[in-house]
Image (cartoon, rainbow, N blue to C red; front, side, top):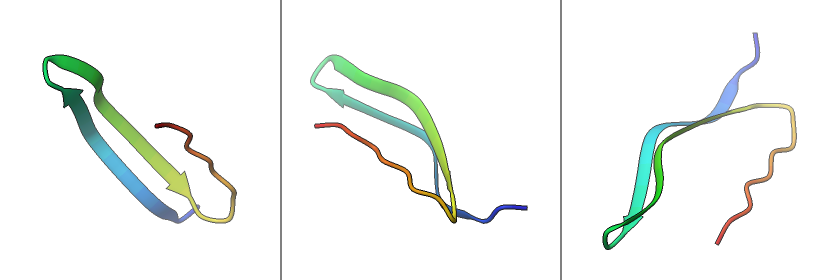
Length: 39
């Protein structure tokens, strides 16, 4: 079983009335390389 080093669930972000993302979930396992690119 792989350990999880970062876990997020149900994250949403909006700017005024514009929804940038809705209900995002992410699980990052240990022992690897993970990149997240964004503004």
